[in-house]
Length: 122
Length: 216
Image (cartoon, rainbow over all chains, first blue to last red; front, side):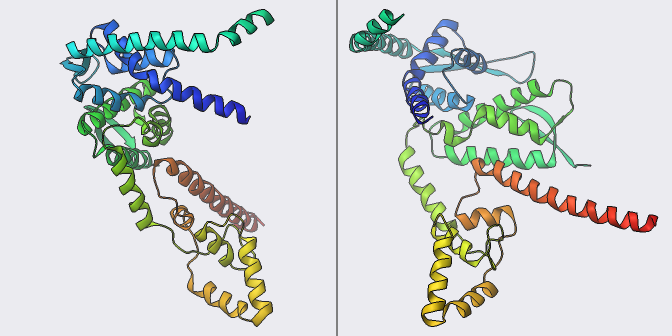
């Protein structure tokens, strides 16, 4: 029970660290992204637990000049904000992405013995 | 029967039960307070309100009125500021500092605790005030005072007379020194509800007794 709790907590910390990267990647993928759609994709990937997490992050990225938004009319209610990457945002995302790839390699290297053992067991 | 209110949440109109409205308002207040010193404060809160409006729409379907259960459901999805507050936004440190000071100011109050009492709840109230897990230690101290100098009983009686009883849920929170914030509200309401249903049950029993008397 205790170990499971620790796993959950640490897993949450890991996800938190790469949440920014995922949000930016989703926005880059959609070109113009509506926050509720970003939430849907993040939830499908089990990246966030509570939806409120997204909004302060978007605000921070926006005030850092990495994101921008435009208002668009919607058929279902009031106008909606659509977020897109700025030039700086694209550069930032590329930088994060290469960082992430390095990290994946580093982690794979450090845990190689574990994954090798696992395969033998299977 | 329940009173309803009409509100505009994120640019969408809703009809909402009064108790649900109070719950929602407290939640939004906590959100506003949490982000009030962050950059982009208005955008964060406006976006969160707009998202909550969407979630209410999805949840309601064809139902006309937002109920307390709907509000609780949506708050669970959005999360409390504590849940996503860990996402550091700019000047987070000084804010949490002032939060602590505020908690300290409103702090704990000394009550008698009727939920865990042997005589008058004085000892368990004192234990809650000083954060002692088990009131039995305070009771032991009183017994020691009584045995060693006879001072315990008069002191107890004075405290019993002077201290107010923790009657409501917010009293009980103040007794334990827990601030009344969003994460506590659910519990407060549950405590209030169980108290109410107990009262209603008693009332029902009384009425039944009256009724059966009349029948005879």
